[in-house]
Length: 345
Image (cartoon, rainbow, N blue to C red):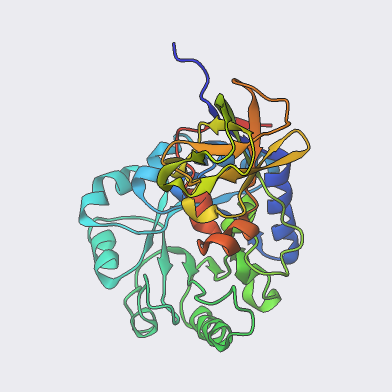
């Protein structure tokens, strides 16, 4: 039996639920779902679904049928939709599943209809030019005969509240709602929820904000869900003038103690985080020195009482690291791999 991993991802149940409730409260007349694609944005989709369903969330969204199957049996009362619809290769799985496909093209509509598929969702493109039927197709009879649970579209620029495309997409979607029959209508993602009541419709679909990402400054109620800890593998004494790490990019100005941690860019802790990256030894901030490598980082722990086997926290503030690295908050979260032991607290 393997021992515990030398990497920990601490996940805060209460914060996850509080984030969902805060988002749900922005538009109280609309239901609030949860996107759990990419394994719950890296946190673990099964655990996320279980915790949010217990809090009252009923609508969940994966990207693919493999992700839907990986969730296993859903909690009682929960509903699941698969955002990428149905390829021909998906038909056996989709027809056997309790999840609804989100049909994204006239080809997918025909495939679902010809197979005798039942209730479905439909995505219509209102200006993002990604997935979705065109407005003309949706209004021109392509959906005739389908039983549509949720008609949806997706905002391209919701994280830029003043972007004119937001209002154009909202107005186009409102016209769709008047023309196409469905049980519910859904437009807003995390940032879209913060655009106001006009964007809420019947169902909102937050993703990044559930997990602690802050899509817009107005998301003042969102808090971090994930925190990283890494174990010290070795503490080295390094003489003044010695170099640390690949490329000899850091030179000790004086005699130093260097802790080597079991963490690197293969775990999602990217080279772009430096300079400025640090770890926490208790309440002491200790800098990451030298290059971040694939599986290891070096931390200057001179005059800090730590040793092999001790655990250090790493800075993982999504907004700060995003600004420093140029990576999006989405990339930071979904980049956390399965080397981490995920611990819900």
